[in-house]
Structure formats: C-alpha cells, structure tokens
Image 1: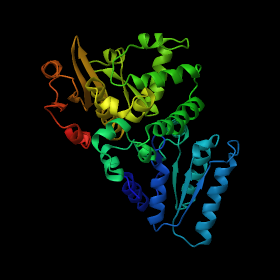
Image 2: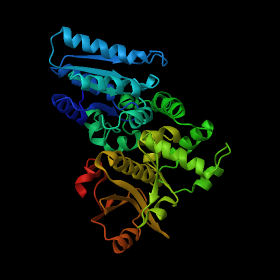
Image 3: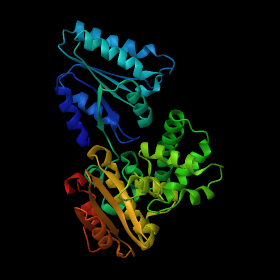
Image 4: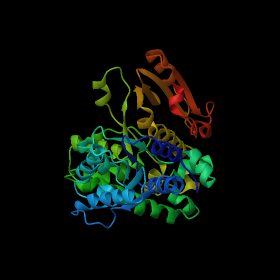
Length: 394
C-alpha cells in the first residue's frame, strides 16, 4: 500500500517524548485514516484505535470513557507508554473540551499516554482546536495528492492527472468517466459542502453557498468580480456574504479566490478574485466535460493546465508558509505570484493556444521578484513543475 510523506512524519513524532497531541488535518478523501492505520501496523508502541463514527453526538462522556480504557490497558499491561487514536472526533459535541480535560489530567499525573486525533471535517477540527486546545497540539497536514504521488501510486501520466486530479479513491474509476464523475460528486463534493461546511459554519443561505461552490469551480482559472458572480446565482445575497462563503471554501481546501498582488494589503483584499480549485477533479466533475474533448481543445486545456499549476502551488501554501496571489495591470498579467518573507516569485502558465503576454517582464520591472519564469510551452515543462517543492524556489 502506498505511503505518503506524512507517514514518516507521524512515525517520527510518535517516537518523541509526549509533549503534544498530534492532529491529522486535511480535506476529505486524501487518506488520513489510511495513513494512521499504516503507522499503527508498524509502531512498537501499544495502542488502541477508536472511532466516534456512529456514536451519538450528544454522548460527550464517550471520549472520557475511551480515554480511561486506554489508561487501564496501559496500567494493567505494564506499558511505559501507550497510544490512543481517536478518529472522527469532531462528531462528538464539545469534543475539544473533553479532549483538553483528559489531556491536562494525564499531564498533571505524569501519565505517558500519547494521543492522535483526526476527522473527516477539516473545518470542525480547526474550530475545536482554536477554541480549546491552544498550545496543546501540533498539526500533521495532509493536502490533496500531488502529481508525483498519483503517478507513483496509480501510474497516472501528467495529462490524466491535470484532468482527473488527485483523489485516490477515484483512480480506478477514470476509465468510466460517468461513474468517476458520480463518485466525485456523491462521495466528496456533497459531504464536504453539505455536512462539513453547513454543519460547522453559520450559513444563512445554504443554497447560495452550494451554487457559489459549483459555479466557482467551473470558473477555475478565471478572474471574476463577486458582483458579476452574484448576478449568475439564483439565490439573493450580497457581495459581503459571497466573500465570506468564498473564504470558508478556501479554509475547506476546495476553492480559493486569489487576490491581486500589490504592495499594500488594502489593495490586495479589495481586488477582483481569481478563482482556483484545490483539486482539478472538482473542475472536471462539475464542468461535465469529457477528457478527450477538453484535451483536444487548446483554449480549454490551457485553463485546466493553469488550474493544475495553481492547485499544486495552493496545496503546499499552508505547510510551507507562503501566500499565493495573481497580478494584473490592464491587459498585462501574471498567473501566480508566490510571496514569503517579503520576497516573491512570479509564475506565468503558457499552454494550449495561450501565448505569453508582456505581463512577466512588466512585473519584473515593477517588483523585482526573486525568480520569474514560464511553466509550459517554451518554459519549465508542466510535468516537471508539478513535481517541484515550491519552498525550495526561495
């Protein structure tokens, strides 16, 4: 079974002395539970894995019960250390308070019980962590699967990765595009939007949120004002509501509205957003387009390539601590600007029938980036760029 890089990270942290709760965090269907089970199969630390799936959400005592069970097994087994893993922890009401109470009790009494928590909802985990567990945890982030991972695990070539994206559960369905599209919609999109977002955030207009997500994914790679986007949505709302919903979709690692790069923050945050999916599966599934038709249409394929490049950059942004923007001045543009510690890198994507414009040299003249280059035709091959570590560019 394929092991993602986070396997080694988690295994190494479990060997360290007990200091922090380890939290496995990431979007749906990226293999969080699978990775944890792989580590448990190999670790020498005695352990128990429990899941809150199927436990009534009102049963807040459940966490304390399983924690006490782990303590008893550690004590009666004569173990110097023990590992408790709780999956789907966010499904219990006030889970973070219960975890905090038990963790602090073990810390006070010098109980060497190590703890790992994970869940399918990134938003619910995040809310609980920031509310109650500040200073008591560290994250192991699991982003969407990269091209290299999908190639190594399933043999995907760059063209199929660009279209079908990086959900491992759909890899064996790609030969039947109708079935694959149904899987993405039913097993990933519906739970992510209807369960995770709508049960975590206060969303006064659920239909507006759903429409924004579905329409926004099909606009991936395009700049579009929220006012114009609002005119294409059926439910009534305002630009502020739409902006808040777009932020929530970004936090869920589904859809991002990139802001325009500028020297001051006010100009950045008041700009027209450029939409970009975190996984091109979302663009392909919701557009309804067939791979063969998109691949042979240069203009369309260029947008898919740009979205794949953007997704690759975005998926590493949180872990590698950089920000992602785009830039435009009149008809001159740069597709992606990556910024870290007041240094920036300009990236222009050129593929299909897209031709490079004067945006890159203009940007270099204005902002003096550390690097500026083209991905695609006459530049870095797309397949090569999709395997780069963005942080190393700095």
